[in-house]
Amino acid sequence: MSNSLDGYAVLITGGSTDLGLSHARVLGGRGAKIAITDFKQDNLDRAKAELQRDGVDALCLMADNRVVAEVQTAVAKAETEFGKVDVLVNNAGITGMMKPIEEIDEAFFDSLFDTHVKGAFFAVQAVVTGMKRRKFGRIINTGSPFAMVGSRDESL
Image (cartoon, rainbow, N blue to C red; front, side):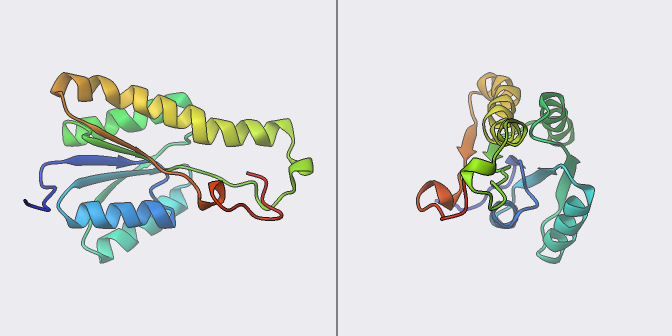
């Protein structure tokens, strides 16, 4: 069995983070075409440079996971560039910024929910039509280690 991912196209949301970069390095290093998203251009620029040093050429796409239209646009750009998206890695995430639960207000909670749940859902929705048409696709949803261990001052 080959470990090659030549010919596969991967979109990683939140791809400029440590975990997202790790996914991009591994999958790109095995030959997959890589697209990453982030909502800050500086993060994308830094990630692109790091990935290039590791021999991975990534398509870097500005997209805020909390904004459905931006998620849809990023998927459409990746599909246009690569002809398809075979693998979606829902990796975008934010934390409670070390706030106790009593200090999380509704606006911040909405930002957390929109990033983790709404953004992931609409990214899946955006790629699934092409995956169904091709009768192939993989969707990977990552989570924070805090889901398993928590922290005294970390609410979400």
